[in-house]
Length: 355
Image (cartoon, rainbow, N blue to C red; front, side, top):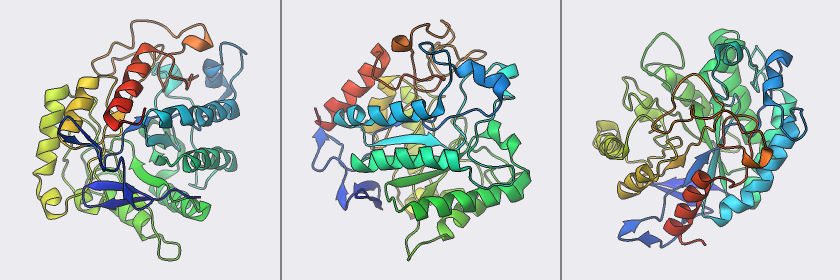
């Protein structure tokens, strides 16, 4: 347990030193950034046998949650060799196949209906934290994904889930953790995970301590509105916007607008985009504006609607395991096995000078 993530102003520190120490690239400061990738399905499972059949590996014909996590952990050293320092994993994962007959019925949640943690998910998450810790990497742990909230019994269960997850993470002893409370919260005051109330849960997570230590907590913001009304902007330890609705020029403007906001001006903090796209012009725009950037690659076979600028609907899911695209459509090949993945990781290695 040797990796610690901290914040100093608008920079991230690992083990007391700025990330990528001393690194500049063509006049742009890299030191203090946290290049990351959305690997939200790292501890995925499905308790609904009717939908679980859709996640079967093409080489074995069966779904295996432990294999999924083991292969993810085995891929981490290669990510790190390319300069990647953080991954986002989720206690409720993210969208895989968006066809309603699947998307509305699969059950991928680390929480019981009452908000307690399920041991099998904790065991897989522990493996991820340990593997990342050994490599000097950070895990951004997302608590909630909107489609899986239906399996929780109301707001009291959500509160209990925040308490359960935060306590477990602190008790794990690992210090390489950032919290993303809700994936893409949106404007509103009618739910505790909407913009005008989510600060209550952020403050709850921040209030839980072990020997004076707490977790660094934020919540990712829906890309359609980076600054919805509410007290959340004052509560977060770092900003966590998603950029997958913008092109590079729009992303640049969103970052500038966020940095000009009263909450940021009063308390500058890191801007960490932990979901964007496969489009590297957006990566470059984020670096220009001194914002950390997160690669998001859905993968073919997801169905129903377009995800950002890239057409993930053009093809079906690949028939061979070696060819599986993306990092989110399950089953996942966690290797750097496609042109899109290679382009991202190679560019991170160039930016960071770590290969």
